[in-house]
Amino acid sequence: MQILRNRSLYFVLIAALGPQMVLAASPADTPIVDVMLHDNGTLYGRLIDRQQQPVPQRRVELQPPLGGAPIATATTGSDGWFQVHGVRGGVYRLASAGDTGMLRTWAPKTAPPTAHPAVKMVSCDSCNAGCAPSFGPAPACEAGGGGFPWGKAALVGVAAVGITWAIIEITDDDAS
Image (tube, one colour):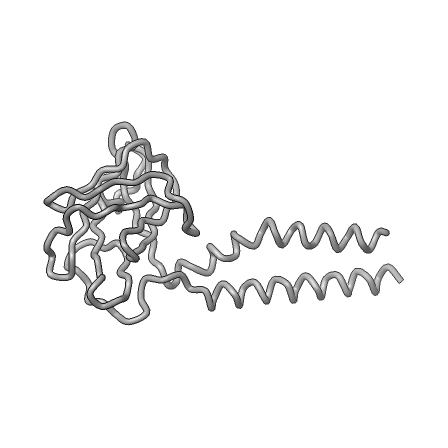
């Protein structure tokens, strides 16, 4: 009975830590952009294309870090600018028509000096590859960019299961 309880505990630990390990795998492939929030938790941003032209009337979603149902949505104006109100400081995924990027938002007066007052997201619809939110010149699209690193996440998950299994076996041997 004790062995069954130990195994259950290990699997509960993996279930709790699994999402954290997936997040730990993502920063190398998906840079996180620091953005300061303004009054009432307002996030300002602009969606442009690769030629630096505004992308009008496009839905922009603020999602949890691993994606999923939007926390908030906005639509770009004719100038490509959008506002999302009521945002709290934290890590989010910004998505628009297949383009995604990671943001770390900071409450007013808490942002580090490197945080930007607005996010500029470059839409890469034309080359079928996502571009992360960026600042300065629009980056060229690269095949395979911008997506979630599922291969790395799977590797981390397999490693976690293997380590847990080894711990269970060692614990079972010690119990005998």
